[in-house]
Image 1 (cartoon, rainbow, N blue to C red):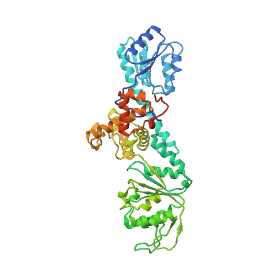
Image 2 (image 1 turned 45 degrees about the vertical axis):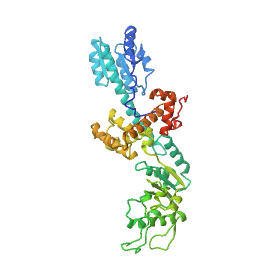
Image 3 (image 1 turned 90 degrees about the vertical axis):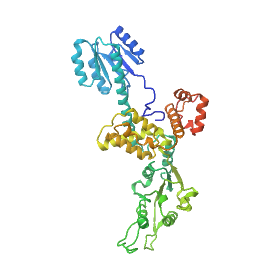
Image 4 (image 1 turned 30 degrees about the vertical axis):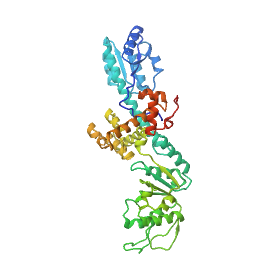
Length: 465
C-alpha cells in the first residue's frame, strides 16, 4: 500500500514497545504500569484476562505480560487462548514460587519467558524489550509473505505501487485487446518481458502462443530463417521446410527482445511484415497472411538520431504505436519492499527454506544501493539471502563500493532517496515529512525542485497542509 513500507529503514527511530499487562492486583498493576511508562513502554493495563482478550487479535503488535493466578480466566488459560489467536504472540508469565514448574512447561509450549515474584523492574523491562523486537520481526516477515501472495493473485502480475508502475498497469489493461503493436523501453533487468507476458495474458490472444525471440542472441547467419522460415532447398543445409517464429506466432503475440540488435537487412523485411501482416518464407513465392500482435523491447532510445546508423527510422515509427517505458529500480525505490517480498517468497518455495530474519546492514543496503541490474539483480539478491550466503556485511554488500559517481554525487542521490522515503512513509503529508527530516519548509521545497521530486506522486489520504 502507498505510504506503508514492508522494509523499515534501520536508521529510523525504533517503534515504542507495546505491552498488554494483566494482573487482578490493582496496586501491583499500577506500580508496574508506572515503571514501564518511565522506560518508554506503551502499556494497556487490564484487571482481567477477559478484558485483555477483547483487545488482542492476530495483528497485535506487542507483548502480553500476565499473572498466572487470577479469577475467572487464569494466566495459563489466557496463554492457551492467545496461542489459538496467534502462537507467535510473545507471552511473559508472572509467577509465584509455587507456579514455576507450570511456567517452565508453558515455555516448552511456546511462552516467551517467565518472571518469579519478586522480580527487579529492570528484568521486566528487558524481557519486554526483547520480546517486542521478536514480535516486530515476526510481523514484518509475515507482511512480506502476505505481500508476495497478493502480488501473485494480481491479474496484472507486474509488481509495483509507485505511480509510474500504476500507470503502466492501467495502460496494459487499456490496450490489451486493442491489437496495437507496442514498444517497451527499459534498462537491463527492469522487466520488459514481464510486460509483454502480462499484455499477452490480458488480451484475447492469451489462448494462443506467446513467441519470444531474443534478437541479440541469434547469429546473423540464421536470424532470417528463424524469423521468416524457409522451404526445403532454399539454401545449403535446408533439407526440409521450416515454419518461422513469426508465422508460428500467428494468432498470438510475437515478442522481439533487444530489437536494437536486429541486423539492418532483417529490419527491412520485418518492416514489410508489420505493414502487410503477410510473410513469404525463404525460397518460396507463397504469401501467407498473419494475425499477430508485435511487442518489441529495447534498452536503447530508438527515437534518438544517434541510433540511426543501426536502426531504421521507419521501423521505429512503425513499432512506436504505443510506447511503455519501465523506470529503473533506483527511480522507484518505494517498490523495493514489495518486489523483495515476492522474490523472497519465490526463493523460499523453490529452495524449501524459511525466510531468515533480515539484519540491519542488509536492510541498509537494500535502501541505499542503486541496483544497476534492476529487478533481476534484486531477485538474485533475494535468492542468495534465502540460501544464507550473505554471511557478512563485506560479503553481502559488494556492489556498494562500485556505485558510480563522485562523493558529492552520491550524497545528492542519498539525500533525494531519503526525501522520497519520507514522503512515501507519510503519504505526501508535508508537515509530517518536515518533522521526520528535521528541515525547514523552504529548504524542503528547494530540495524537491533540485532533485526533480513531485510531492503529488506520494499523496495518499494524509493531510497536505
